[in-house]
Length: 143
Image (cartoon, rainbow, N blue to C red; front, side):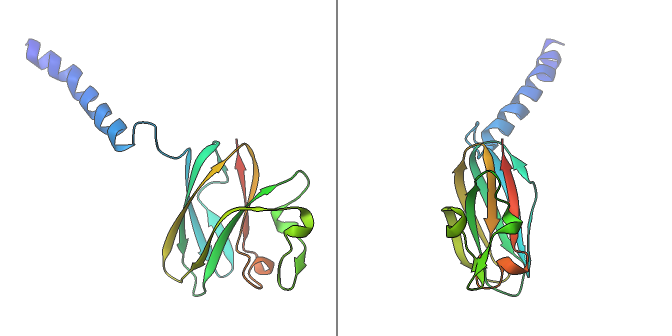
């Protein structure tokens, strides 16, 4: 009888231990975001994530090559309202600096990008010629 009771207590602990082990024991990114690129949109599985290491799992489901650039957004700057110059978002004119990027993501392929983000607002942009202007941007809020 004692071994049955002990098994009832130990089984959930073993399962919990396996779960924590599989998750990396707290070493996973603060947020895993699925990002889908299409002609011409960026869709993400979430728009809000905790600060820390953020992993973007990027899937290009469109027929064109795309990219992802990550920009910190100052107060008053919206990803949908960036000026366009020479067919790309003119990020320099509004003081944006790319924090990181993945270029040349071929159609029907995937890529990952891990970036450390502090609380704030960020833009995800495909800034290949004409892509931003056709709607390839998304807002990410980091808390």
